[in-house]
Image (cartoon, rainbow, N blue to C red; front, side, top):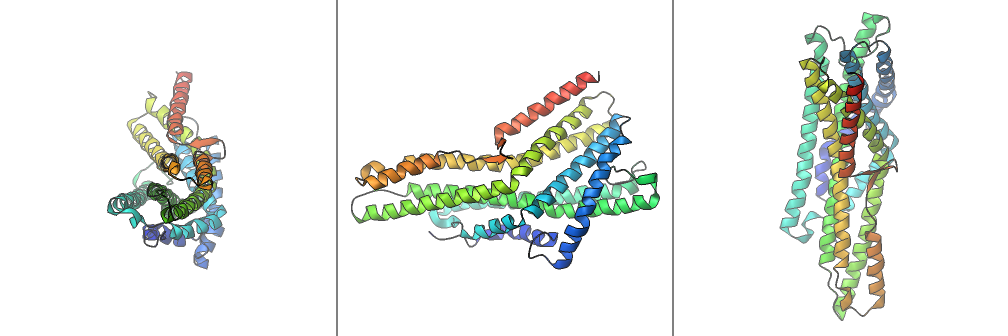
Length: 377
């Protein structure tokens, strides 16, 4: 089988942003210093100050919503950066492995076209996310100058209400929001592209298995060689899947908690009678954004699981009964047993990442909203 050479072009934007983030081994030294030794500690300090701010801002629904949005937004950014730093070696391995994948044109133009469209859609989606992030950053950073009652891009505790400290916090928050644009392209972008590319490889492997036909003589020997090659590639793909899951497992678990929280509070604001129009609109936007990120994470994981199940069916349909070779029959049987094990992403080893869990999160969020609304009426 030929290996993938051209498909890594889809990763160009993500890899460029990864280098600029200062979190990659190949990043320039001054970018590493700024990102890891200046902005990262500052981000933790700001997160603590935003959380501490609930002590002073809890008098009404508007203040609580402000603190919630600030803490939730910063938590998402901090979580992404922490995982990028912690799993930098795994990211490098995952990026290198993409060049070993099979080419999309192995099984004809229709299959190639479909797979390339999927990858191109991911690239377009990443660009849309980054553009949306730029617009959001501009709005947040300019809001203190345009809206009278807003002092900072995100609500934060200002020690002593000192104007100098306030300006320092403004600069720090603005820098973190700008830095976040890189993480959207790197963290979310690499996840989208690697999972979509892995799904494409499962599709190609199905096509390869479909082409295997056992007949007597030399053709059986060739089919046996193909069968072993496909089995080895299947094991390789499972190894890549395990690596992706290892990187994002903790993030899935944290996202589960943050999304329930991020769905519950905005819905509570929306359904509350004392909420004004601005609060309702902002809450709708936050709820939509959080759940959009959830869909972007959960759907690709579920798609891989579906393609892996189809692979087991394709193995089952191999005409093993045409061969009298007992070794080949046993090989297919054991491979089929291996392929029937569900290929699932997990969150901290506790959650199975699929569409069902995505709907469960919505139900829990709505139930908690109903409970909170009942307690406050």
